[in-house]
Image 1 (cartoon, rainbow, N blue to C red):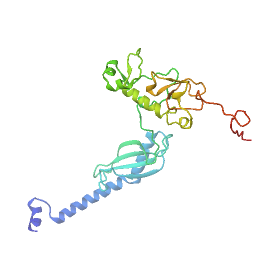
Image 2 (image 1 turned 180 degrees about the vertical axis):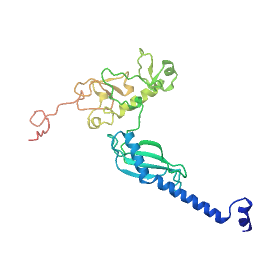
Image 3 (image 1 turned 90 degrees about the horizontal axis):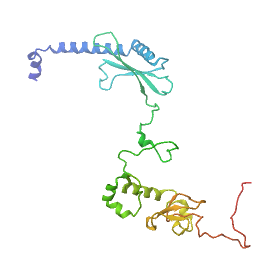
Image 4 (image 1 turned 180 degrees about the horizontal axis):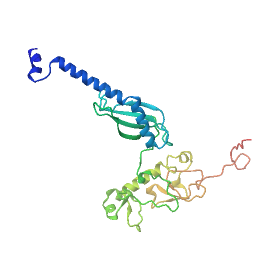
Length: 272
């Protein structure tokens, strides 16, 4: 308690009453600055500079706030917000950042900007071109070079050193400068298995027989690959199909006959 009574005088500070007077004066100045930047005059200045920047009409005043790091009692800077009427910027906001030097009645415009509001519609996150391309996007005359680090490709030397390639027993195009990598082939086979002509497709599940016993099925390289080409023009003609894929156009499919000896085509509803 003794230390508390002598420290102010020992440090050359004003007595307690003087400190209260100084604090009261500081609070007064803060209130004056707050009133200035939050006043109707400040709002009109903000609207004027925003209207000039927007080159058109500006919407209603949405409010005024202080920057997050400033604190509510500082009052040196204030941000006025206005609704945007700019075409294509629905729910965006114009802001004007105003400042006042302590003790001054002058208002300075620090910044004017158009920013997204809480409900604003924003453009999707930018995606590099090479990541935007999807299967089926390539059209006649289009070019689509592989990535520089495309994992689907490998040099012939790299492929020869890859132990996985030795176990594949899958042919590569010997005339190509590069080879399909082991990873490229693995991804391809997985894609084919899960595709429309794989073993778990609806056609395969409902088929009585599979491709591995069909004359229209041409195995790739040898039967062990489990993939081949369909040559049936009425089915998956020209498509890569799994050996356990199947359809109703199997080469061993037999015609069904009814009790009278006529062909059984099943019931047909013409909707009439």
